[in-house]
Length: 345
Image 1 (cartoon, helix red, strand yellow):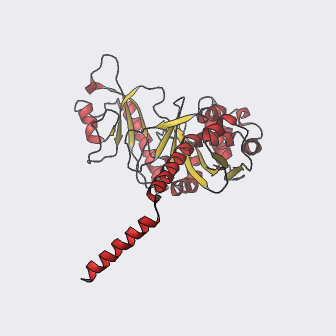
Image 2 (image 1 turned 45 degrees about the horizontal axis):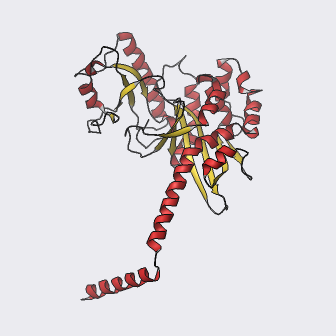
Image 3 (image 1 turned 180 degrees about the vertical axis):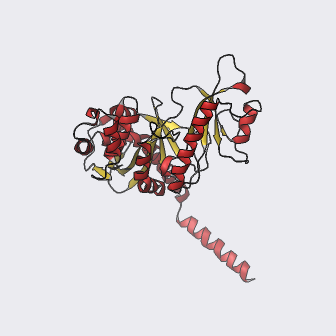
């Protein structure tokens, strides 16, 4: 009886509240759609805003100070590698926009959101890394970053992260939670120390993280803000016509596999490859084994425990599906950034 009375009271209260707030469900739905639209816009634009920050006078001055001039004037790989591990200078550079930047096209695309602040992690070290490893150097990377669009990673991981791909296909932008961004900040010195030794000293298949940013937007009325944390990495399959991806983890669990665009796991590789494993020459096997040893030793040293080998398969002319050749393989470990989330790229 008491329970029934309580239920009746709750029902009456709910009815009264709904009547007094006529139209609130519709308003709530509009608010949710507005928030979703805002997140979509900021996600699509965060790479352009990050590129704008890299081109700012503050960022250019810090890189020039550390490098002794424009990063493009550093001629030797040794000097660039030394700059990656330099301990002087800020580990985080903030570029603030008290007034909207003079970028009419960008501001029109923002649709009411204005760039407020960008934090660039390790600006000089990353500039040196990009100059060392990116085709066209740092300037080419920044030009690519200005234009990106949403990208479907093929259901390869469980973290639910949003990905963008630069319009030229060269780089991937992963939108990450704040804790993942800070995890990379913590491990970045060890990451730079390792990457500078590759591949000349240590063979490695580790995907390279090429930049880390915190982009903050504000509403036009300056009453609300919205943040995005992003890591930019190389697109391992750029220039390859990859028809299938396998995320090899030594796992027996089932993941996807029915959709040709899905990223599949270990047991599906045997099915796709006619029952065979990856067939390598002795020299290639030795090189792969050394690279995997180096990468897993490094990841273990920074307590990253969830990583895998991403294999892309290319259909060669005249080959059957069961004999697709391996075009590219990479230890897609989310680099030093992610000690918990599944591999997504």
